[in-house]
Image 1 (cartoon, rainbow, N blue to C red):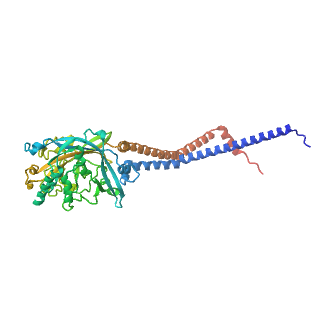
Image 2 (image 1 turned 180 degrees about the vertical axis):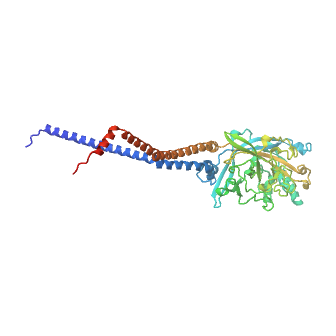
Image 3 (image 1 turned 90 degrees about the vertical axis):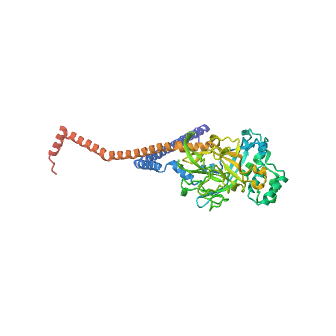
Length: 553
């Protein structure tokens, strides 16, 4: 029979619990100690792997290879080489496929101030005054993008305008006096037609009471220039009059959509990058006979991107449908924009001159003067010609056809400023003037028609201005052109020195271990032997030991 009291049992249980707890703590401490030792061993193992002689030599070789590779294949060149592919998802492609809204279009029109005096014969020439600018944002969209197997890229470039109220100070409802483009344009188109056709047109114009000068609002002049004679002529001869709206911007931006094929990929190299291979499937404007016209759109550019590694001797060809021809730009000078070295190329002042070798695609049957180029092929054969604004080059003379023009080189010339390594345009200004070319109208047998014979009437001029780049693009160009080359040089020099130091350190260490340390050890050993041999007690005991007779067995 047990004599343990409840209190004794409780005390025993308590002792048991305390012993169990202590055992558990000891077990945990042992585990922690083992874990700690395991982690320490693992850490020492990693250190040994990273820092042992073989690893250091391997890392040294890797660093030297990286350094040499960096000099053979500079990072900037690798990035440019990758850009040639225009891969979706990479910055160059994304920036091109959705161009930033940086291009502003400014339109200037000409108001006639002496139309009555001219018609009465009191003034020999029409006098004009410039009104503008009327400011729009030109929105460019790249659509239907397709990569071809022959390392080309095909896409549709579509442009349209967005009116900017905050940038405009010209009332669009303001009225101006303008030549009747419909009447004079159709008359010029029919100048060499059959007598009965010309007579019929004169009768039609009289029936509609069409005037040689009309009053229009600024908006109508740009977008809604209509006349009853256009409607009637279009119904009678639809092929001759493809439109009933002669608004200047309406004509330019009506269906302003073109299909481009450009060169991309390493096989073309840096110099051919993004140059046009085909426009609407052809090597030239389809309206021109490829066998008679030597001008090609191949090698030109849309102006959004230029080739890499541009030089001062390069001639850039910018293509603008409004002019209906590729325009050459030549190097002018070096500049710096926001710390980035750039090149400025100016549009040639002879871009609209006549060629004397018989291959002038932009002359007409009636010779055009220098400084004026036929653009009718891109405007349904309507007699439109392109020139410099206000004939600022002096060709033709500013007062040759009208008075009131005020040419100014700074205000009227065209140029592009490009970062030459990447071919990125920092600033670009394209300016051109639209004119109505009126042929000899003496065949209409009317004094009023003859007053307009052989005139080139300025309709208006347009400025396209790419005003800078988005901040992210400028930062990327600045890093790539200004920062990356010296930074990569410093990094590769440091990498080379680090790799060399690791290898040299191991060579010296191995030499010390194999040659110097054994010599030191041998030297110390010999020295100790010498000391012992010089010890008299040691010598005496040694001799005594040798002389001691051996005990016989």
